[in-house]
Length: 236
Image (tube, rainbow, N blue to C red; front, side, top):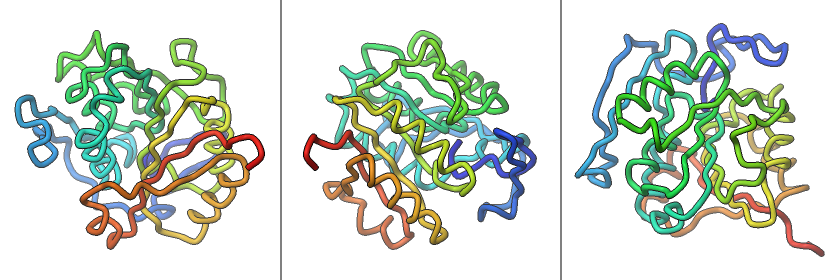
């Protein structure tokens, strides 16, 4: 889930209503080419967006920010990494990484069950059936068998949006982040609760803001933050 799933989806007993997140007006399903300002110029990503089953079907700014940073700064690192995306929605970030970084192992894009069909459509649109796997992964629930227990890299864009689910997201991060894992976490600050969530995460995990992104000044003005989350070192 990204800044998303706010329409009629039920998740872990929570009924998520649209007024819990600020979202653009829903639009008809569309398919567009996305090259992330030329970073995928040779092979633009084909992305279908469809908000019929929730806001997760739309591409959100934090996802674009995260994808651009990874394509610009982390191509070599990601090529040799096991990668899991949480709350993938349409699959924007994970698919962009698969196209632009060509990881040696399949990229796992995950979300609630209602998003799986859209993720699979986008995998097929980009002929990535051998490079990307779509899985149902409910935060706080069991990890899908195919998903690595402690991946090298976790991707999460606009996952901090629904306050009652914050403990479930925190639990999932604490379980997935291993000694050698880095989570790239990008989100738009909308409410005080968002920062309270980040404060809670700091009690168990190490958070560091990303400072080497040339777009940082621009998206910071839009209240978007990009950071890394890692296991805390012993004694800290």
